[in-house]
Image (cartoon, rainbow, N blue to C red):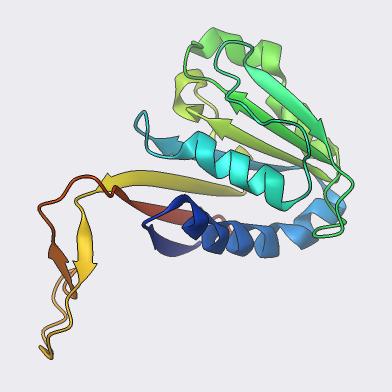
Length: 179
């Protein structure tokens, strides 16, 4: 397993983790469907990530959260990632474990060219073995780069100072790839 961490300050910053994900799923998409679990609290950026990913691969219709319809399916004819034919977005927030049978998530694995993004996968007890990657979204305290010349690198955010201003939400996106 390997992981990558991205700090985003604006919605436009999502392109970096999206590009990383697309680069990593190209080869697997040729052989099977790929399932990605999206984890994080309400408002942490899961749906915004799906929207930006969808637009970046050529989805032209409006991408909305499937909270009340549970699942949205988008056909794709993409020059960006020709291996991708179908994007499926599932929001399991309102579901319970017994609902997972009706979603038949495992069936998507047999469909090459299918990318399935599942928000709140723990709500329906999906096994980790299904996920090609887990993406964790976390709202962080507002941070700015500390330009001091200190060589002390202790801690994950050693080169950042906390800002009092909460108007600019900073998010940490951690992508954990299975292989």
